[in-house]
Amino acid sequence: MTNSRPSSVLVVDDDADLRQTVSESLEAAGFAVSQARDAADASDRLEAFAYDGLVVDLCLPDANGMGVLEGALDRYPEIKAVVMTGFGGVTEAVKAIKRGAIDFLIKPFQLTQLARVLRTAIDQRRLQLESADLRAQLSGRFSFDNIVGRDPAMQRLFSTLEQIAPMHSTVLLHGETGTGKELVARTIHHHSSRTAHRFVAFNAAAIPEGLIEAELFGHVKGAFTGAVATRVGRFELAHRGTLFIDEVAMMPMPLQAKLLRALQEREVERVGESKPMKVDIRVIAATNVDLRRLVAEGRFREDLYYRLNVIPITLPPLRARRGDIPLLAQRMIQKACGENGLTPKALTQDALRTLMAYDWPGNVRQLENAVEHAVAMSLQAAEITTDALPEEVRQPAAAEVQHAIPIPEDGLDFSTVISQIERDLIQRCLEKTGGNKRQAARLLNLSRTTFLDKLQRLRLAEAAA
Ligand SMILES: Nc1ncnc2c1ncn2[C@@H]1O[C@H](COP(=O)(O)OP(=O)(O)OP(=O)(O)O)[C@@H](O)[C@H]1O
Ligand SMILES: [Mg+2]
Image 1 (spheres, rainbow, N blue to C red):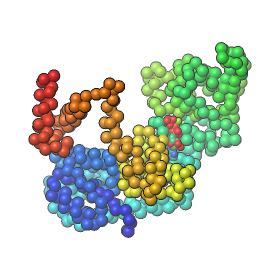
Image 2 (spheres, rainbow, N blue to C red):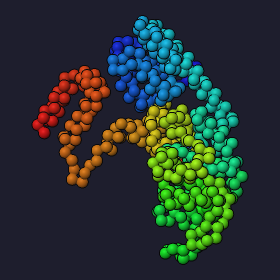
Image 3 (tube, rainbow, N blue to C red):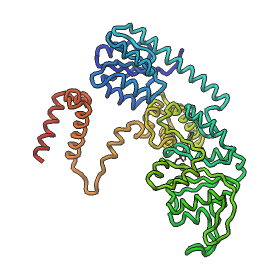
Image 4 (cartoon, helix red, strand yellow):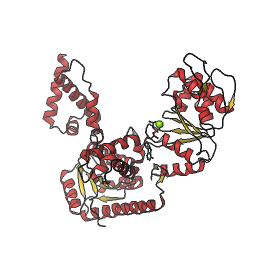
């Protein structure tokens, strides 16, 4: 198959000669190759980049290659992995295949065989993706309204939404911040018979506790100090439509009781008036914390939990469906470019792989912001490159370290802080290697003497302190 983007492969082996030979032969076969000399190095690289293929020696100095394989497959279920092993390792190699590797090679092996195996598997995957893309474009199956996703979990979500949207039942959405809870709630409303009426959103965390009741149920003039006019509550506003109760876990206990009553009776009373009104509403609640845990801790009413948890829907975090990132990014670029009157541009392969490798604690919302940032940084460029991505995405570890050190008003002592960082890195590497100094030095890319020297200086400083 001809394509302009070379497929990327990570080669992991502690034997530098073999690693080099394997890499050169793969490069000659048209792959873009990165190398890692041990498990720690490999997992760092896999955290930063979504490779198409992985070639890993099962016997590594610092850990079993099986761990590298499993970590890679967990993170990128589509990665095509080949394991290498010596004569004694056939049983392990078979295990690797069971875990999801596509092939194993017993050393010494023919280099052309490796390139062939990888090429076939990666091309097949690309063809599948391309034809799936084509089918999706024809049928629009990889989105449900504005919700985008090709991951099996998202496909299941789409069919659930199709089934439950027309129903009257209460829905409880659970998902981390930025996973699309509000988007899903609005989509349910739009696919229901209530769509001609209002979708009313209410965020329990955004309103001062004392005002929640009046906000939800409304109040009459003079009901309390400050109630200068009669006010219609959210329940009434949502009559015949949908009421979206966001961050329901933040609802204070006394109000949970009132909310429960309103949901059970489908009846509300404005504050300051004892005239119950019937409301016809569908309720969708959302939470980013586990309500069951709050129930167990006595912080959320169990009866209210059951009343809300009629149709539970969990939205997966973005890092659990990295395969959706290319599609999402593409749509977001189109949107961001369209809004700014630009012709949509493509992400370079490198930039896309960097997006796919990142953990996205802020999920789809954070990806949206990153893409918008990248589009703004690439106004003059033909393509969007890695450089245009926000720093926390490009170098997650570096950004973390940077932000971890606060700079006090009266400044700090540079050398003390740097030695603290050195000590921390050295200690963590020693812990990771079970106290093995040679391996710890290697993890830090330091010569053994430099490492021992630093270790000794830190210990002297500690003794003196
Ligand atoms: N699957 C998706 N496809 C396309 N866009 C999405 C998807 N999921 C979320 N978004 C977009 O990401 C942004 C955040 O989504 P939303 O506000 O629904 O998240 P949320 O779960 O309510 O977050 P929070 O808990 O922080 O309120 C929105 O702009 C939304 O349109
Ligand atoms: Mg929200």
